[in-house]
Image 1 (cartoon, rainbow, N blue to C red):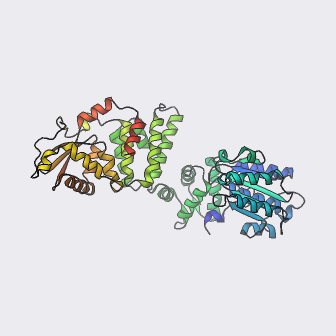
Image 2 (cartoon, rainbow, N blue to C red):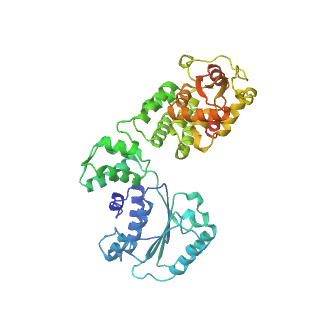
Image 3 (tube, rainbow, N blue to C red):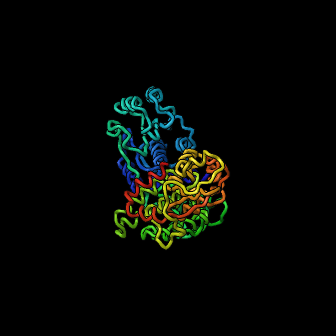
Length: 465
């Protein structure tokens, strides 16, 4: 059994959020349970665990006269814990969202419980129900049988009709504090008889963004092969690299130091840091500086740009390149001292085009370039991204010069893999074997700095090519 299931809270006292613990304790003290509850809040915050604790509270054999903590020992509690209780029905609305499912629920809810005191329906992701299903559920909530209890769970309250919300007692689950996370993870670690350093526990609590479930999964991975829980092991699982710190890259971005930011990015990639983790850490670091008044509101443009990159990572063939583009777009063009091998002024038509074929003599570099861009497709997204911002120079013999705006674009194009692929495309467009020379274009960069426009629009334009 994995640790998340093994240490799922079984009593009110074991629930992770202090506010939720207080609400359930108040219910117990008042000895009064509503006919329907709506549990709302972020994923992994303990909604389903709370629903099951509540189901045991109302059905525990020791609570027949007055409500209290579930004993988790009687036959009713044990049946609910093991998932064998016929009178506790859990429904995943994501896959059982139609009106027929709710009609079946309406028919069965009228029947008295087979064994337990109350028949409990737990509907997870209730916001996924169809409009017709919500209408059918509303009828049941308006006239619920006395032996029934509904517990609806959702991560998206705004999608639940107000008519449903108004007929439920709402319990809102907030993002957990660092202290609440540490308390929860400490319970798991102690239960496993392991030791943990304060630094490791604090790092874990801050890394999982309020999700107890994600945190316990990380602990499960670490403790499966280690006798204790230390910072390096937690870092390795969370970020993909022990000892990595994002702070220096955040500082470079704040200063708009493209050279330093790209260097730190390269070090992170070389060290095996997960790119999704890196982007999330950068956004959080920039957010903290914004809220702390250390940077101007302009930094929100970078946060949005990084978020857009994060969304595209799953389908990108080169996630590092997307981050590089976002970094350079934010920092502006490279400094003049960093620009190497500036080219002379480019004419629209190539000079001294040499070709044994008459067709090639009639072509100019622009025509060839159009064919190149048309040849790029889904299998060449990296080249497509770079070349959409590049420009052709002259074709001289079997050599085509291509000008790019940034040095890192040149480095990417001249990697063995991309260079070979690029030269094949050029050769096909020209009609003979060609090789490519890539140069950094100084004039285009400086002009681009003067007429930069909106950073986000420009980034979106690059990513959309």
